[in-house]
Length: 507
Ligand code: ATP
Image (cartoon, rainbow, N blue to C red; front, side, top):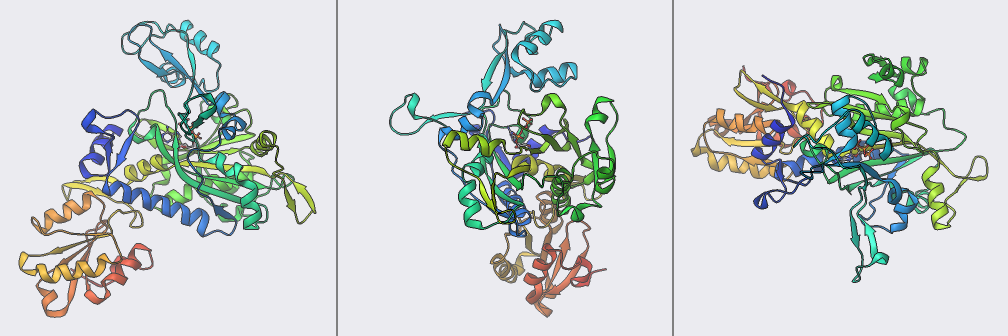
């Protein structure tokens, strides 16, 4: 089967009720998407798993949920008002607008992230690049701020201008002192946040990959300014293997190299903190069923790094349209806290018990991950067409599956008993009841939306109160008692038992 494209995925997501184009009845709205019933369940599961793994199961990270519209000074301090910009190319004839760095990368295979408008104009002219739609010349490039503006209060003038947040991270810095004092955390520690972010992208594309409204899951991880080398948790990931794509490998046009964290550290490819957060980022995905061969970690080249970042690596995924950023991990040092101190006039330093001194911590890592891009990763790695079954099988990890179980009566005569089973497990899991069509057809429908377990009520149920449970990944079936069904599904989802051991295997 040909490789699934991003357009194929968009069609599949719409057909099955995961994601719809926003306001489709009005012709859609570029850069905006609506999640349907299955999509919102999957997205919530992704967010809940992320929060559990990165916040609830750790002692050193706490969370916040900041507001979407915040004091405009926050975005002045962060530098977004002045420089959160992309360079736009506008066609002189058909008015097509495109993002300059993406267009040049596509046409000339060179990375121009961070280049100034004049440099971009020079490249366009030198290489005689024309509008991809009508082949006319471009006008001189324009800087374009990506923040959405709004007005707060009844007056629409300059003094009431505010912005929809273009990232969740800055709220963490603005609240830093309150959180640090309340949570009584000792360095190193992190503050996490997830939620909506808005960017007026010049050319939204590739389905959920680049949209104008999306969600992020971010952590600011703070360390003592004198202790930025050693990561106390490095042993937890020392044997994790990653595909490393260092700056040197990129410059020499070499391929990424797969190696263990301990070997990459020995070779000084990266520091301990970046190694720890990159491995932790990838492990979260692979623990939930994503395929490690589809990930690589790439260091930012000098020209693409933000001016304040000491070092940045991206966790990238092999999307159908190429290797692209899934999560950025920057070392921002004390840039943000210093900026907010300057703009607010407030002291954001904290007292260090060990040295008995006030210090301004460094953000040793800012793992910043897109929820919608994660959604795509899990969908692509789960999706496959099973030739033997003749249908799509969406092999989502049971923890992520939007619907955990299906309940089917073998024949309509058994509806009453099947409904009782459905009512019993519905109190604990998201599940569906399906009585239409052959059982084979019902299994196929369940496969396509990734329902991991399907319970069929047959004539044995009347005799011995048993049901037949089918596993999506192997199609193996077991018999077990109705009384054990709820607990068995719970243990299967949380990986406490193997399917074959959860009941009597049906030969
Ligand atoms: P890109 O280079 O792809 O524009 P970025 O470097 O601007 O991304 P960050 O500012 O580092 O992205 O944002 C952190 C994460 O938020 C990204 O890794 C991505 O997963 C997600 N993200 C950023 N912009 C978008 C968008 N327009 N649509 C969907 N997700 C996004």
